[in-house]
Amino acid sequence: QQQVKQSPQSLIVQKGGISIINCAYENTAFDYFPWYQQFPGKGPALLIAIRPDVSEKKEGRFTISFNKSAKQFSLHIMDSQPGDSATYFCAASWGTSGSRLTFGEGTQLTVNP
Amino acid sequence: DARVTQTPRHKVTEMGQEVTMRCQPILGHNTVFWYRQTMMQGLELLAYFRNRAPLDDSGMPKDRFSAEMPDATLATLKIQPSEPRDSAVYFCASGRTGTGGYTFGSGTRLTVV
Image (cartoon, rainbow over all chains, first blue to last red; front, side, top):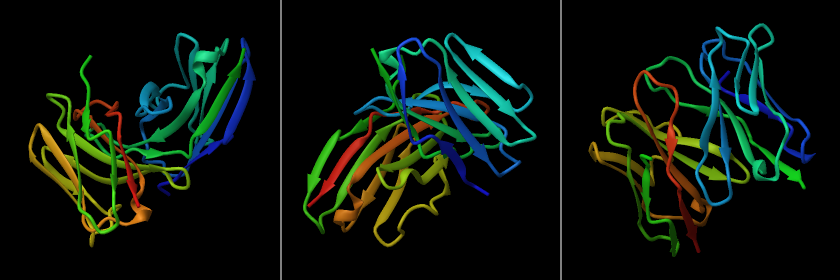
């Protein structure tokens, strides 16, 4: 119940295309769903996050879509750029009191010029 | 920008030696996490602290790993004795109660030979 399943493992997109990464969870107690972006040699960095009271959140070219009934959420990167090439992790936690994050397995995104 | 500072950035040590990794969380953050990242296991939670008290260290091999927060500005992760299977990147992250986002450090890349 603590797992977060992420797919695909790797993704190759052409510049200007849409990148879509999906995650699914089991624990209905999860109430915070962030996405992290990690470049080689760096730590994961918070990209965007959503709580289950909304179905979508958009920040610039990045959008999270959330489906509470299906227990799924996804990251959409519009107009993908070579600089977006990185590893993306979805995660989930519960409560706002600083609880642990459970991470997905990661998706290595490559955006070709 | 406020940063989580981890030292050392790289460590190569011989099997059986003691390894100490240090983390300076962001000032004002009261929750500190230690994660380990490997290709095979992804991001695994080792331990976390809230207000310097350990909340969960179930992810750590207790016989060789220990985590402490001697004060609010320092978290340490020790491995004694180290083994080749401990080779990984160890990340520290910090956050504040009531907010969901956590900030990761740049990690310590540990190689045990």
